[in-house]
Amino acid sequence: MTILNELSAVELRDRITGGEIKSVDAAEAVFQAIAAWDPFLHAYNSTFRESTLRGAEKIDRDRAAGKKPGLLSGVPIAIKDNICTTFGTTTCSSKMLADFRSPYNASVVEKLQNAGALIVGKTNLDEFAMGSSTENSAFGPTHNPWNTRRVPGGSSGGSAAATAAGLCSAALGSDTGGSIRQPASLCGIVGLKPTYGLVSRYGLVAFASSLDQIGPLARTVADAALLLQVIAGHDPRDSTSWPEPSDDYLSELEKPLEEVRLGLPEEFTGEGVDAEVASAVRTAVEFYRAQGAKIVPVSLPHTRYGIAAYYVIAPAEAASNLARYDGVHYGHRAAHPEDLYDLYAASRAQGFGPEVQRRIMLGTYALSAGYYDAYYLRALKVRQLIKHDFDEAFQQCDFIACPTSPTVAFELGAKSGDPLRMYLCDVFTVTCNIAGIPGMNIPCGFSSDGLPIGLQLLGPIFSERRMLRLARQYEKNHDWHKRRPQPPAAEPRHKQPD
Ligand code: GLN
Image (cartoon, rainbow, N blue to C red; front, side, top):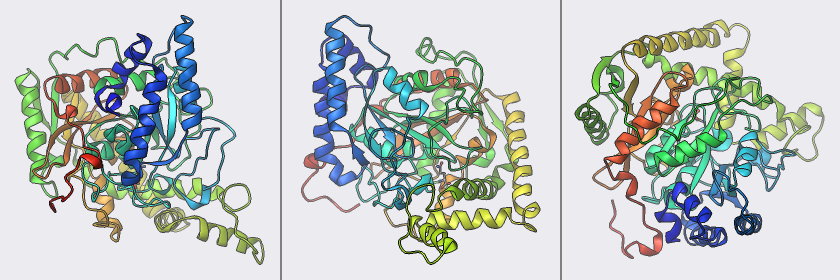
């Protein structure tokens, strides 16, 4: 267990390829950690012990035979359960797809496997990635490893909890309005949402296609860069994939940025932000100032419409994408329908949970004749204004710094009865998807009750290479990322209530 909890993906890979650690031993250690800890967390929907161990044996054999190792040789990786794999199921944490077996692998899964990664399991999420706490999973919530009475964030809560707790070296998530960055923030790890089009969406179950991106969750900036290196790049099977070759995210990672201008948006502070979150983010910005960054105030005036626009655009696209679940082509099929209409209605009513149904209704309403102009079209206009805000801001600064989440991890159940309060968790993350730009979370402190706080960096399209260097510069001078949550056995028997 300690092997993985202490080593980063890069270190583990280096030790496996250098022969100091056997891939099989590393894989065994992951499954031991999962057996010990996941009953308390429920980070995984399914795990693949046999295939992982077989893969690990092959890595060890290939090494002995002198074969050239891949970038992720022997590294145990978890995959969000809305990314298709031919092995196991791809459930989207929905009853609708509880038994769904994909006939193909997502491009990102192929790329990971070609790089030597071992796919250890599929992680829990809010049903169809709709949520900010992983409580919307049809299979029960994931718990935060720092405090199991708290949520891990969402919707990639399983990937974030598994990575934070050392139940994998790193993971993939998807981010439509914050679902990589916000759980990374609440679990104290690094999470990166790439520029729209940088990573192939082929094999990602669609939620809102103009916003969805796959990206890495990892314990260090270098690990996030390593995963991005492997998964980025053009894919002819995704028509929105960017046709140019991707950057090299690893080669200059250790080199601090020179003369960086860091923008502080006035709209991203103030009301609704925990005092401890605001203070940790301010301290992080001061660090950059002390390192020579120029801090420039910027304004993103349309940010205040971000949540409203997002919660029209995302449900509208979702309503259309989820129309394919009709009980005929895919997924759950209701028994004994009276007629075809009843088959559709009953299959969908039984297969989809309450939040997914709410989104479908919101989206259908926003797209319907008579309301299209008032809601959907208007939201698209706001989208342009938000994009324009960022274009203007990036004339004055190279990157923007702000909180990822206005609060630290909240109690399970605290917001699940109040959708609007839950939607407000995404206030700092949705504009990044709306504009298609990259954003990442890095750990930047802890609250007085020991919960992680995250700093969000936002940059212009395709600025990942420099953004990762900026993040690494912070990480190198702090040790937040070295703190790890303790497994249950190590917790005091009589825990103080918090
Ligand atoms: N919390 C947001 C939502 O519920 C974002 C989800 C996501 O990024 N997948 O839509």
